[in-house]
Length: 230
Image 1: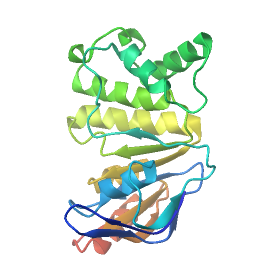
Image 2 (image 1 turned 60 degrees about the vertical axis):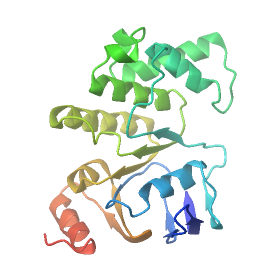
Image 3 (image 1 turned 90 degrees about the vertical axis):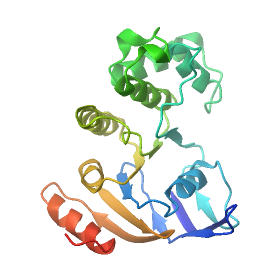
């Protein structure tokens, strides 16, 4: 994915600008942003939910339509977990699928997030963590090589959040795809990503590599870019 000077005039007559940046396949990038810096606008531009007034956003290959996991699960309350996933597949590239492939996609996604036994449950029967797992499964069943995540764990308790972070890392290592994970939490960004983008006032001001033994150095670099003492 590459975006070059994407500019959007929103309803408050402000504009957001993203510097030139690339996101090669097989990588995970986290983006720790402060409130109001344009993070949701950026994600919507990449997902194709909004169009820039200037510039362009290109996703390669073109057939790799991003799957999105939002801050809240956004499950339809009158449908079971399984039916929520089936609904997502109706507009998936390559649809309609055979009954066998549809069942395979749903069962695989539920297994990956640990919800095999909750397929026939309704959203009100799920805990917050389970509901967020169902939202992740809905994205995974699309089998996209590009996953966009907009603060998906921010409303969860610390224990559930930590478990989902571990699960996400393991799942995406198996998939060998690309993830753009938006978060306010710097330790979360450093733990999940191989590279961390820093965005301030609508501009990407840093692209920091994260190594297995360089987490503290990465956190210090991010805090310095954001103008916060380490």
